[in-house]
Every structure is written in structure tokens, then in C-alpha cells.
Image 1 (spheres, rainbow over the protein chains, first blue to last red):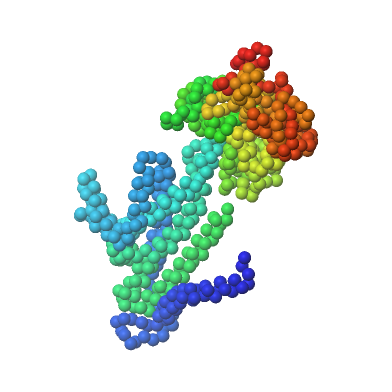
Image 2: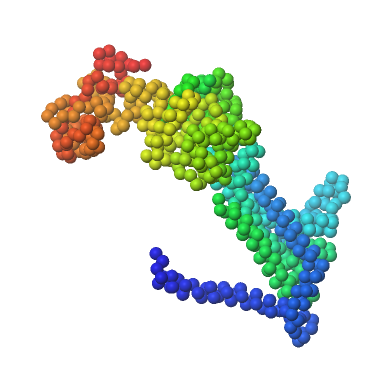
Length: 290
Length: 342
């Protein structure tokens, strides 16, 4: 029972943690906000001065910004579609009884434990490399011209790498959702004359809707800030072909030493992430209502 | 129409045989109840008929056609599951319409049939709700509605009332019986509750460890059980069994007498004992009597019978209601002939 006393005590005991978290979050945010209104270039120390919204004006009118925005959306959207579609497929397969099920399920999760820099390096040097890579060897074995993935289709290649990393997560969530589906419901649908495809569309997919929303939400949060894979493989190039907002902010502040411009970009990224979050929360709210 | 014939069917899961060779004929329009203790194979038998499990050997004929290898949807049967198995993301209307939509019926026909089924089951006001917003009894009716719109050759019920509370169960029992009377369709009903079996069935199939112990009308099973298992399973409170000296006096290894066929008396009778518990229900009195040299016997007296714990009472079995069993538990015929009943 929460009495007025116990509520007050709860607030009192919680406040240090809340205050610490607030400081942890607010101080960097406020400093970034402050830097974004300064001319602050590491190559010209001592010349910092207040320049109003000029940093924002430069960042938002930079052609690289629109390219980065499009790349970010393509990366997030592409990976989401591939992981959810692939995850449903894999979950359906793994849900079937077969010999060695436990070990296979364990192996399926494995890519999730490989850190992004390592997996990107493995993909770049051992799989996609046009000279030494496995794909090139296969192409040559078939008498085809090896394909230089990261030069010819850089963004698609990065989407592929990131998809490989996130597929286990989607599979795992969707598999657990699938296992919670009442077998009698599937049998009832079978008795009702629903074939395998009808059962998938009318029974299994609606049952997975909630899990798909959860996968979308969690992955979006992480996919908006994909960075290591880009840094290791393409450095945002060729040109701005694989630069996303996160990478653009990095390039602005640490490659061009423009801390003010980078901070402005960071604030823009925060605003964009919040817009995405509003849409996602609406979608979740609707889906979790049932 | 809905005649179902099982011929020498068996079912085993791996090395474990669940149903030894079994023959059963269910006539058109009959209400057949499969009853037995948990794990006796009654649900498995129903699932074999439904086609949700494949038989290991033997044939199933439905409506004169061999249905042994047919998939469930083509057997023309509809099933009501224990968990109802409703589709939670669909409205009641769409739940009931689902089998019709799967049969690719046109929309007008679907609507007409759904409305008609809803009217029969008093669901008209709930068509646009989801299963989550309905009570247990209403969900049960939706599940039945989904079965009747298909106009199946037979209905299969898998313990449909076990998730309902006692009062609702009695109501739904009546509703299902009325539905059977009005539709006249063959129904197969699985339950472990012998009261459900006795009240609803035209024909009861008593199963034990996959074997059919006896098939017959409720009264037949009650008055002429073929063996000790059926005698003990049908009737509530269960039949009293007496072994040893007392039974040998009647020329049997075991004698059985139902509580309602024991005459209670406070001044004299065949067996005497002391009352350990007496249950006074008003309409009946059940008296648990510790009989000297025999053990506890239950006796029923109609109306009120004023005895208390520790009172001395006498019990006398009605001779013509006495059941006699041999050492293997099979029933022996009346005292005079002393022969086995087939």
C-alpha cells in the first residue's frame, strides 16, 4: 500500500539517482547546444565567438546533409525490411523439429556477439574483397567477373553487413513469439480449411505483429547510429555514397575540426531521431493495444 | 449422412502404443460421448477422426467414403477445442466467417450464414467485438458458431466445457444438447466428466488405456456395466466394491453395489457399522459408513436421514441391484445363472 508517507520516502530515496542521470544527460546535451552556436574550429584556437544559427544554416544547406539523410533512411529502412522478412523465414524454419535444434539455434545467434568493427572487417577483407574475397573466388570459379561490392554498390553492401549483424536478434524475438502461438489455433484454422499460406497470412503474421513492432523499435534506435561499419569499410565514400548523419557529424567535427558545425549536426540528429521516435511510439501504441 | 466407421485403427507414438486395434461405428445423428480417465486416449481418438493425427493402421470411413488419408479440411468435420482456439485479432464476425472465407464463398452468402449462426447462438449483439472482450461462455458459443456455419457432417468437441465455471457448464451442456436436437447432426464429444457423459449422450464409449471398455446408452452402462472399471467410472458417488468373505457369499470375487441401492436403517440389516461422515444435502443424504469387517461403504438416502458421526446404522443391499464380478473384474450375470455376461 502506497501511503502519502511511503510515496514521499520513495521520492526522497530515488532523487539522487534521478539527479545523477539528469546531470549525465543534460550536461553533454547543453554543452553540445552551446557549442553549436559558436564558431569553434580546432585549427583556429582562441577565435571562438557567438555566431548564432550560422552553423545550422551551413549544416542544413550542405548537399552532403541531404545525401546523408537519404542514406540514413535507406540504411534503417533497408535493414529493417531485410531483418524482419529474413527473421520470419528463419524463425519458421527453426520452429520445425529437427535433429540438432539446440546447437543450430545457438549458432544462429552467434553473429550478434561479433562486434561491429570485426564483422565489418571480416566482410570487407574476407568476403567482399574483389581480389582475395570468398565471393570473388566463387565468381571466378563460375567464370564470372568478380564484383567489387564496396566500390560498385557501397550502400547496399553496408546494408547487407548490418543486416547480417541484426538478423539473429530479429530471428530470436520472432522465434519466441512464434513459439507462444497456441497450436490449437493453428489446428482450428487447418480444420477450417486454411492451407499453409492462409494460415501464415491470417494466423501467424497477425500473431507476430507485436514482436515485429518490438524489433522495429529496438533496431531503429541502434540503426540510426550505425558508425563502425561505415568507418571500417568505406569511410563514408565513395563521395558521400555511404555517409549517414552519424558519420557526417563525425566527419564535420573530427575530420574538418569544426566542432561548432559538428555540434549543430548532432542537435539536428537528435531532432530527427525524436521525430522518428514519435512515429514509432504511435505505431507501438496502436499495436500493443489489442 | 454423418456416419463414421472406425475399423481396426491403431495409433502409436514411436514405440508407445496409445490405441490398440479399435473398432467403432457411430451412426448418423447420434450424440456419442467418449469418456474415460485422463490419458486414456479419448482425445487422441478424436484427433484421429478429425485428421489432426494420422492413424498408424486401420481405416476411417466418414459418410461412406474412405477418409483415412484425407487432410482435416476435406473430411467435412468441425471441431470445438478445449481452449476454444479463437483468432484473437479478428472480430467475432470474422472468427465465425473464417471457414467460409477459406471456402471462398461470396461475401453476401458469408454474411447471411454468419448472421444466421449468430442468431442461433445469441451472439448478434457481439459480432463486432473481439474474443478478448467476451466472457468464457460467449467465447465458447463463438467457437461453436465457427463450427456450425460450415454445416459439417459431424461435430467434434474436445472437452469444451472444462474451462467454464460449474453454473455455466450446466447451461452450456443444455445449449449443446438443444443444438444437437435442432440440427440433428452427428456429434462426438470428449470429456472426463461422467456427469456430462450421462446427461448428454445417446451413446457412451468408455475408454481405458486406449481400449473400449464398453459402448452403450447411459442407462445401459449404469445398470449393466460389463466390468469393474465401467461400474466404478459411471455413477456418482462411485459404486461400493466389496471383496473377500462377503462377496464369496454371493458367489463372486467382488460384489458392487451403488450407494442409492443400499437401504439405510437404524434398527437392523445385513451389515452394521458406524457413521464416519454424513452429508446432508436436503434432497439426499450421503452417509459414509465404517462397516465391520468390510471397510467404508457409501449409502444414499432420499431426503433427510438424521444420523451423525458415531451413530450405529445397518445397510442392506437391494438384491436385484447387486453387481457381481469375477477375479478378472468381468461382470457375472444374476445369481441364478452364474454365467458371464458377454
